[in-house]
Image (cartoon, rainbow over all chains, first blue to last red; front, top):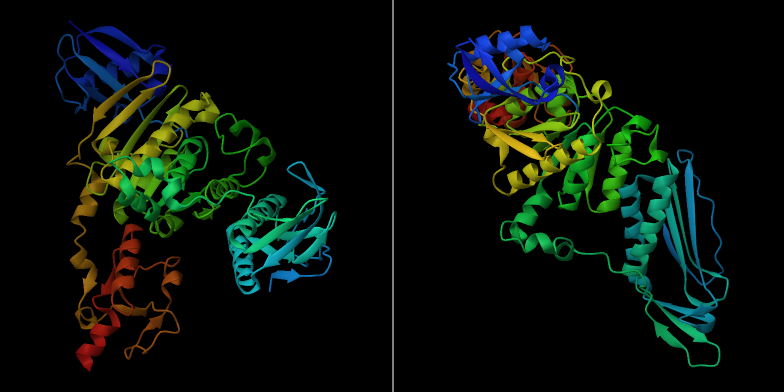
Length: 80
Length: 476
């Protein structure tokens, strides 16, 4: 079990009802984590539309999670 | 003739413009006091040859600036008594606003540019020549942009770059409320505005380009009126239409920078594709309640599809209309877009390889690095499209291809081979599914057309390298 800090933006923040949280998980990759969050919190977007950044850089879904990581979840935004 | 000088008593004339709905008349009369002195009459002296040329020029400029149907002005010369008109300006426009604005502008210009002097005849005191130019001199380039020119990062050279720049705003709403006045104020010389919508009451809390009295009017028309009021010299091109696959290439082609202020994911990804294909710069921003995103896409940097390989469906995340938005959020992001455009024109923009996430609740801005994705279909498609393969050096290379001469009908000589003649502008609305070679005078226009058509998905179109010139030199 690892603990990571998750930050939510835009529609994901609305749907999660939180700006950020410390999250305990068994997941080992970014992809697994995103799918777990989508299912658990009904985020309403497919994983292809949620981009993940770690240390201010976008990462690919197969990146390994590590204890204490901060990850940022970024959805598309439409308003203008 | 629109500008007249006369010794006769003035009265407004009827302007006959069936296309005009707004007629404004300004009369400048002689009043009975000046600076606390009683005035009995005025005397106007004029340098007539120059006055007539300048007056005529002012009225013609006003007609094109304010899109007037008609404009006329008459100035008295010689002695003019109290209560008589010294000058009358009349304008006719489709709507009242342009008529009013043009009237005021013409009057300011007359006072500044037309060589007319006035002498005030006071009661019980020698008369005096006074300056006719009561209004301040219209500000010049150096004065308008003095505080920019002082910045070492801009200087006069940079300011001229801004003046020569052509910037297209797609979506004239909340984001444009931040970007448009900033860009116009900064001295961008040419602005295009694309938006099919009219102003609605629910727009006004964030779309501060518009007043309550603008409700029901076309956004592009009100926004260009505002831009012209801010800077008379600006070239404004309104496009009251939706940006689509069909018109996007033709509109975007004429600009260097595109500012995406739409609230549609479809349009954002369309702009990404079009700007990519035409090698234009794009600053795109979006807002969501209290936050927003902004990034800049350059011809060789990472694009929107590098970040989201599958363009999201339009309504997957909601818009301002669904979710609400704090009014100043789009304004703030729009201002940031203007900063990106200005820095880009001057040298390099900041967000060409990153995405800024802006949260106005906490005033926190996060920047996420973006890189070009090796898997981006759009980037790969454009990189692979080798321009050489779009050209043929002779029609003989493709004996089965149809030949189309896209020059204007007036251009000669005629092509000696069997061909169709369709001027370039007529080529965009057709389907080109058979192999076709386009020919123009030198191969420049046909190449551009082929680039556009290929971006629209037609893969069997080619340009004749060197155009008619190459055929003539080859065949004598």
